[in-house]
Amino acid sequence: MSKNNIHVLSRGVIIDQGHILLAYDPRPHPNHYYELNTPFYYLPGGHIDFQESASNALIREIKEETGFEAAIEKFLGIIEHAWNFPGDEVCCHTHEINLIYKLSITELKFGDKVPQKEEHVAFEWLPTDSLYEIDLRPLPLKSALSKWLEGTNDNIFWSTMK
Figure 1 (cartoon, rainbow, N blue to C red):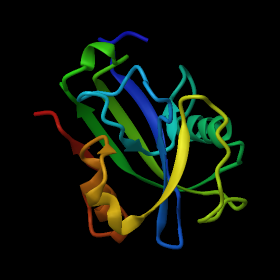
Figure 2: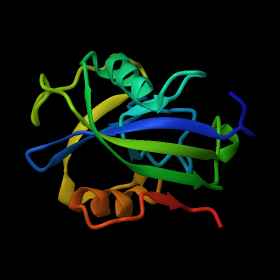
Figure 3: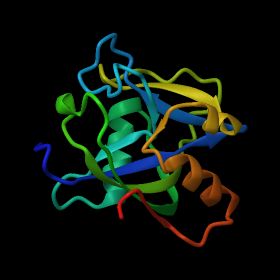
Figure 4: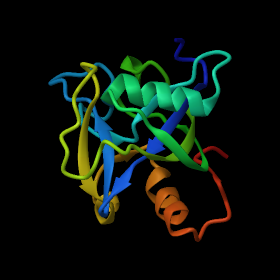
């Protein structure tokens, strides 16, 4: 994947008992942390392959990352994000479009340990009311997610670009 391309990703929101399942890179020295190796959280999911639908990509990515079968509940929105942080030279890309879906996984509930199937992806359940206290990326996700889940946002598209 080229750093100069726009990366298109499909991401899932999984909430149970007031907690959201978030992903992070558990490696001690990942090669894509920005801002002096500051770890951050992001929604589970990943890249959409050529000629793959966004919903199928998300179901595939969740299965690869967790081992669980997911079901799409609804489409929440799109976040377009480009950034320029110190350390970007080690990142594979700096511009992405995220298609965000609400998901359910019947076999997975808050408190369950999510198996780590990939070296660079681990999971943690965090209270939904703590989203503004953590480093959650892409940056517009904090505001968009709370509005989407409350049902108070008619704008399904958020962008950091002008």
